[in-house]
Image 1: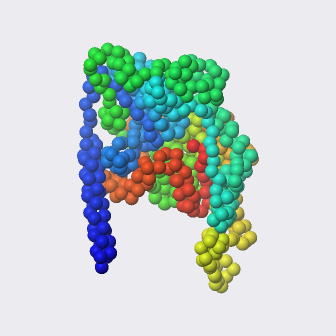
Image 2: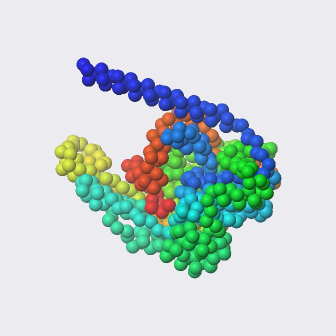
Image 3: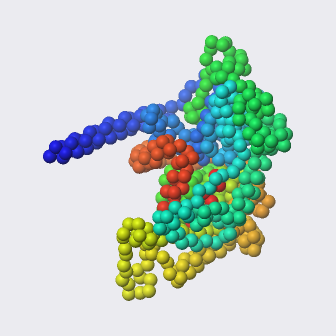
Length: 583
């Protein structure tokens, strides 16, 4: 009885704490939402603070818990790439904004995303305003963003992590063997390496070849751009990076990788001097998320260019944060197709692919939309495999030089846990069936040869359709597409040479091209999918709160591995997915 009372009491206390914490979280979210539409006042002589030390999404995150810090119990809006660029554009023309300050740190965004921001900052500098960057530590991506700045400052006791490009890949074959799990694979494409970690204990030569090519191309672009901005020749820069000569602040300054080794107060003094204000006066920093609220988003025009964002892995059914649901996407495109005010559609893709079926559902609706209005493709960090499947029929495809694309190939993975169940857990199975394959189960027994042949036929059919879709969309013959397919992954620059991409450029260039194709002189831009209601966000956020907490506790790199393993368990049907290690 005593134990019973103890457990009941503990349960009551737990429920009480859950409701109290939940109440305060909801109260904080509601308070944030109530001030959502308030436009802040920007004072004269202000400096825009561009803190991008997070994974920048394509579209601003409206999920109240997506950027909620469960330690400090505070929420921070994760501004999307489009809104960041619009804020920088406005700041260039805003007399109250005198410059931009970039805090350096751990930037986890893709290089193509950073490239877009760098390009926008270069445009900003044409206004004659300054861009300064400072950090105690700067990782490679953070430093790459900073190299566009007029001045780069590094803490005297800080450090830089600029080491070039490469990746260590985890292979799970040995672990599966110890567990008694057999992975039965079906695929088309010698370069379709997304399946390798589950079948091999080391990298295949085709995958080593394509990874070396991709990272080599990205590194070449990296050296060229930094060299131009820092006025260091690429041979010298390559030597600095390859031999880790600039990891210490003093060395980085001596080698012209940074301008000064300053503490923050010294950086602040430099900014004050640039602004021409007194030493005792505070610098008026304006956070970019706050400043974004001042950007006019609804210009008067009856013409719309719809920017449809496909950000995340492609899955069957409904979309969630970090996923593009085939059903949700198709419904949204159908609405845009039927909307007479929408004169053109720009599809912004940042996806490694995923479900082949969902990709095809999306492709069909895009084909219908293309028949009625211009359909322009803008690629972000990733537009590979299923992400390329939904891009290939566009009227024109824009990509960044360091976009990862291609990966035209398909695969399927079916586990057989018979040994795990029988030998490790003591669980056995038995069957009864009135037909040859009536008791077919996936996961508890090996497939027989007929069943394997059936699945392989489905894989091959999907691969043929994939190549045919690309051939028709890119106006090439299937023999040529086969020569560049096989699951091979390319950079945007490489894709341009083999006609997978039409033009190097970002979202702005894609929108301008769409306006030209639709013969529009005045238009407004609207991002889709449309924002959910506050109530829908709260309900969805409560379901996602656990994932957000796990991400914060594990850190970005460990969370990426965790999500990869979680993703494997959710594979359903044939997959069009790029190698998970290329990010």
